[in-house]
Image (cartoon, rainbow, N blue to C red; front, side, top):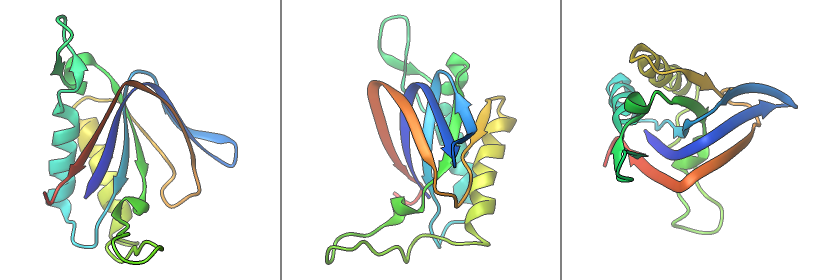
Length: 147
């Protein structure tokens, strides 16, 4: 499972002009599910995202987590994160999971984060989405459950 995590002051996702999810301060997480991912990867990712200390404390150091600051999460599925562009000019997506594996694991990450008390908004799985965000910092972190 691979994630691009961005600390945001706001973010929203829409499909065909309709907003499907939006948050104020928190994390925008673009999440790709791999063909070899399982429930344990989703649980690990949810715990990592909720506890990732990338928010500033009173001294300006990144020592606070999403849980600490009471922020929200916008979770957006993105299979292209599993693209392999090492050969040729067209990425290969054979490592990206499809249904029926990908959606339940994507949703499991969000549900696990919700159970920790964090507000979670979702993109529309498999849809052609437009994502808008204001990256605060900017802070962008890459996380991979296999590395």
